[in-house]
Image 1 (tube, rainbow, N blue to C red):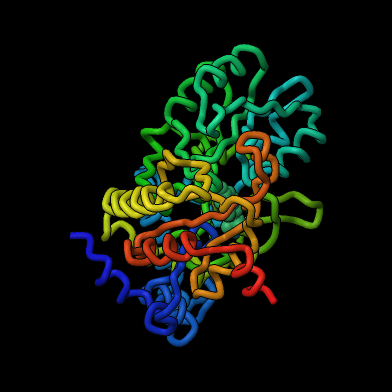
Image 2: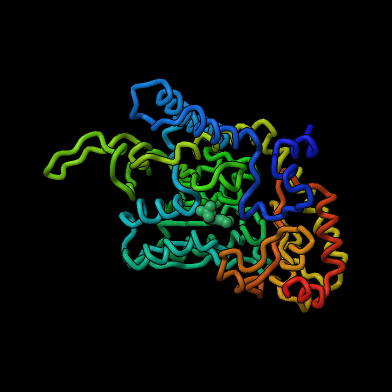
Length: 408
Ligand SMILES: Cc1ncc(COP(=O)(O)O)c(C=O)c1O
């Protein structure tokens, strides 16, 4: 049974800040006590470096660190923990794919396929890689409402020499789920590889990397109940073997000599040079276990229920424009007629309601939805219909005067 009241008791922030209504989990999520305890335990009971100490605490944290690859694998339905690389987050994972793999595998005339709904982290690294390799970026035209158009995608695959396809699994502005399995199958027929930006997917939906047959998938722990500064790159082993580490140093090499001959350690350790974010990894392990205990399908069902409820309520208001009425995953994007999104955000803040306003780092999506700024309410497993009612009530009553009053 999915019991939100019980779940909320696991998150100390609700006790410490009982009035807060938090609809910004797409930016970062709250953390349950078990994650906080795991990080705290590392600092207060088991501080040690990993794989470097001949004493108990180092053995304990090394084992926990290594076991985390198995736990993340279970979450992703991946059968080989060596295909899990710890990174600093989704941005670091995307950069590792773009620079570590594609910089060496693209050439003039090759095409990188993206969409206009990309987060900056899945577009800026490609600009650089395109410049350096003389490959070209093309954008798959989306449907008018921002959903994926498979026919347009097929046309791009037929028309261009596509080598790389890099897309969000779930859009962080509109909450639409891209059909990654079909996208991969079609790309593979043409010999292209697919990188899925999983930042907004892994926290919310069941992700099965083997069923998707996706080549690369990156995500951040902090959006899925884990600590900040830690994330994951999943990649097929064969591709990791052909990926150049972006950092070199201690922990990642087996041997080197004064002439510059270096033998790197095996995969995935070779991508984790230096002392890693150990406490982050240990927190990520607990976060994955917590999510799996609740069940990803149950989490998705709950998120959907709140999203549908909120969209239903907001759509009764004449002065509200909803940009994603068919949102499929945790996000409601809207505006109040005649009031700048950020002013509404400030007003909501004055009532103890946290939302995100602005372009959400997707700075070219205005080409699709016709606006650069939206109010984004993002839902997660601890949100309730009562909270949705509070947001709805505030939006129903909002006026320009009240917003100005909240700012000055
Ligand atoms: C779709 C998407 N990709 C990438 C990122 C970047 O994540 P991070 O800042 O954790 O690296 C985000 C963060 O909002 C996102 O929503």
